[in-house]
Image (cartoon, rainbow, N blue to C red):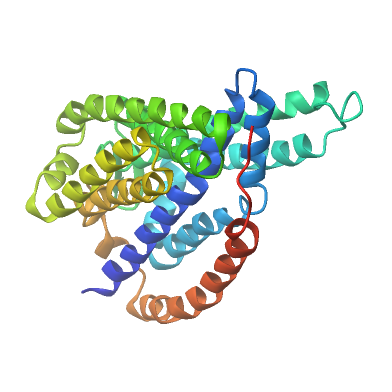
Length: 340
């Protein structure tokens, strides 16, 4: 296997890790924004309790992907930075606002002797929820933008043919699908981390979000065939078939487990579902980083740099993986479930 393909595969694994971990954090912000009913405060408390210890650490995977991109594929990094300048900076702004708002809301002064947050805290909570909702949409839109074929890189110059690629209908639907998937991940995780009536609240939200994911997936299929024929062709070829089959089975298992209140099983199946979705996209997109002009081979750095990146990856993972395992073990392993 070529060096650039191996490094790209590692980058795709990091994208999957970011999706199933930070994606759930974004989803937590979405449900925080739409917390309703008599257990509204308890829902927000459960979300904050689930996110609090680990939400910043999950962004390490996004940093990991960016480092791989500008080190191993500098030409693609430069083209994306120019062609998707606006959505990338909006994503950065969303991540910053989301993090700041979460902290400010957490430490906002209490009113009435501790009975809920004051008006300032509610405003920061609204910013936290809004930023958590907008950011995954933008991330999904950028994913669609590199597949539609209107972001051209000709003789090193970035050219946008017509409507900006991140505003194409396909990209918008992928952005909405990313939003729904984040909401689904968060609701499934939270249903597993709560009990009683609170658990039922998140279970119903998971079923609702899962239904939206299915609906958007149906809408996406004809758009793929018309706006991204290369990606559609890759998804329908034999090489992607095992991933698609496993992903579809995981989606069905996740929905069944939620209906049967098997929340731990639902969590595992949901992770597999999202992982297969992104892995299928990566296999179908291969060998392009930006369709139709930038391939892994054409964007790759010189072989010496690629070898250096590949040989140092195990060292980095050896330092990162135990640290993250310890973090989750300490803060998530023996944490009692939240009750209403």
